[in-house]
Image 1 (cartoon, rainbow, N blue to C red):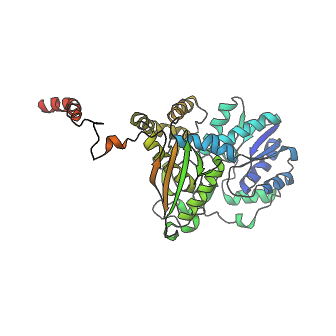
Image 2 (tube, rainbow, N blue to C red):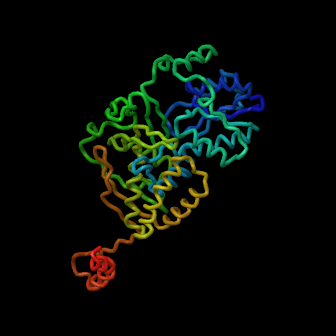
Image 3 (cartoon, helix red, strand yellow):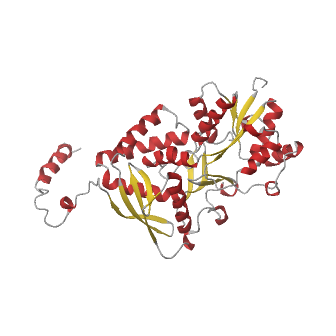
Length: 404
């Protein structure tokens, strides 16, 4: 342990990471640099600075960075171009934040000459894998410290007792058993554990924090438009917006109309199943809109190939392989497909649902002349369908003739 002189800790300012900060100082005898990321989680982050200073961290070694624009522009939007959903449902809100946090941890380690980075993820979850795969991909020789895999503080009671023994302030609301665990950023809020561990029981209403109950949402639908350029959202209701500003505005619309709730039992990378509740209000609206604009701008072959690639792409992000060559290869293909994904989508927001009700594009492949039930003036010769069908039926007819 003595070989570690300085470590960069992903620090929230909460009880767990405050204990980790002191534990690193005690057990490793090292200097700690703290990094707190503003990913749009909606919490005041400056108290983390005061707590870090109180625990002996030098002011110049306390990093609090606003990463909201980078998060949406360089991580969320590229993922949304792929229409990525893990196991068909999960919009990967926690998964996509981890590579950015790891990237900044490594940058700060280089800036400060640190020997190691540390995180507060447990040994049961996916986040430990995501943090560490990203860190090793960016800095192969970095040392990663994961206290939850090393120490014997196996319960909330033990954690609080250790904190008190080392003069770490414990807020009153942390002394009891937490009813569930949460993680939040600009894309989503996730809740897991305790009251959510029985997958038969409905999620209690008090768990939801970012959306109104759809039953209590406005009785009148709201219509909005989202403009896209090369597969990325650029404007809401005709007003140009940056990526983070757009997602923030969509979050408020989703909150108001109860959009984006998901109760999911998923397969963790480490092998176990877990039950979580996700709220992704703006992201859900955005994902629906993106598929809407693709429906008129992507060729069938490209669209179907994207849908085949998507599960693999989503799994790579979920499992922590953002900085892998295979994810980058898939991203190149996905981004190439988005060159003509331009135009406007109109959506109806109503009681938990975001529905596409209109779409238009200067690069639309939709031809009313070909598809019309009226006279198409020779645009399409219906007689051509006979040969097309016979050729596609040939193998089926041969099989039938052989009694197969």
